[in-house]
Length: 174
Image (cartoon, rainbow, N blue to C red; front, side):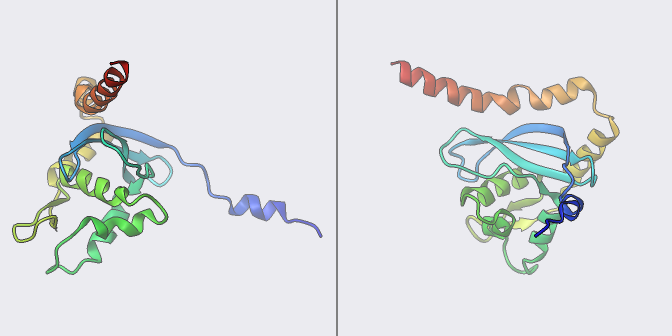
């Protein structure tokens, strides 16, 4: 039997390149660790995306990019009168660590897409992330200076993770 290798090549997904627009840190939802997340632009589809890249605490997570469009669709599935929980984002991470939706929710809280519920603990409400979207537009248009980008990535982004690694190394050495 002859294989159709041409069809396989035609149907193969195009490799994508994501340009990182911003790298910064935020507290986890529990406040027990710090997370580092990135905001990026898929150069092919021009979709703005977000992913978690580091955690000072234990546990695993998915570092797959999630588009703001997919995140918005996940939020839309929650009725307006119901609170948003981290489990709202679980379908975005099929077959992944249970931490992934919680870490994404922490980043979304940090950028202002969700805010803590006034009524229920560990629940959130949708929010209008105008400041975040304005910042993304500025990053895309190049309006933010190199110094501003460095300030966003500098000690704020890597400090907590670097400190945690240094602390673990110091404990091993004692």
